[in-house]
Image (cartoon, rainbow, N blue to C red; front, side, top):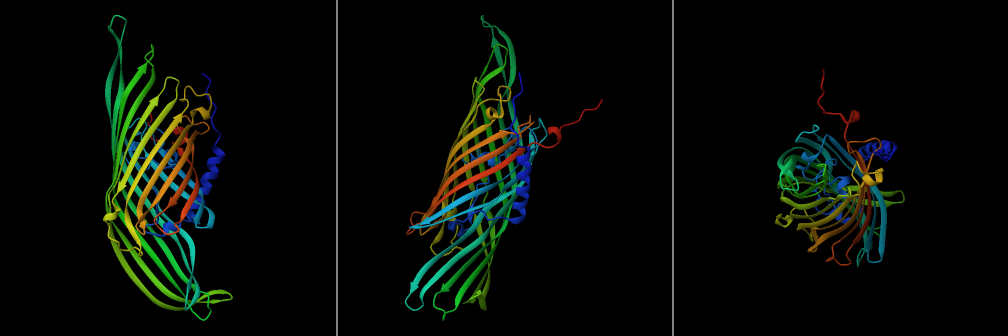
Length: 472
């Protein structure tokens, strides 16, 4: 059989590596959302680029070539050592009444490693990824009978980062498949892997800082403007546990005992255990005088130092996935997932008036298609995997008793790289997202389009890393 042509991505990968390194050093802004002003900022799912297209699912999502960065147990299903990385570009449009603001931004998505010997059943994982983002610059014009017209400006930036290290282990179940002749006599048998069970755990450290500034700019020059600058340092550490169960539900063989089709069921769960979260907050009030050259600080009125300790709730994710490998060589995968975390049990400390913690509930559904497997594909596009997904999320913050809700549609593809026989691929995902809190008066509506690009590599020298050597 003539080998298929592969997608030429070597130059693209080299450019991506350079861009990623520059993003790491510059820490580019990753959101304009005013909703990121509240709580811990805009929380991130932690999914890789390959998972983004399938609604960012991670509980039961497993792949032999791509790293699942949500469920620590999924790494045990990888075939060999795997590296995953990428970055994102976003265009956000924020609307309130008749006002519209739009901006573009970007930043690093994540870097993740899974160390696994080819053919082994144990994997070690480590990586770093965003946990939350905060970035906004909005203003509100008001009128006072004494000071007349004035403007309140809100701006902020920063975010939280999560680093982790973990381990996963897989156990396999075996079964014998027998073949009979026309008379009903057993003529042959083969042993197949009928099930796989993996468990995993990882230790996570969350760190970072948020800066928030509120300025009152009074139009009448006889009044002195004021500014309140708040700087927060966040720290927390804890464990996440995961489990995946894969069961072969059916398989068909041809006359040569070759597997022609199969279907599998996967069940998975992730528990991100509750943990103490420390917030160190410093607040400084100052007076400003607006001159022709710009605002000038004329007095530091007051400053405070505070410390808060909150107990983050346990986060549970449960998912199921159905995989079908057809006789024509295509592979279909369909999955659903639910998420829940009881943030409402937290006390309302460290929050602004009118803002409260709210239970976080979410649902995802996704489907993916690989038209042909390696031995049947004529080109890289037939070997590529295409995915579609829908994701909804409500919480973890509420404004005036209305939870912040997000809905996302996604599309993704993973395309084999030039010369790769191990599953290394170029990954891309596109998302269309809406965010709102409908209970607020003249509520804000956000529409965002995101493009995530990344790659999955199986290093290093001709994909032989960690493969035992044999000598004469």
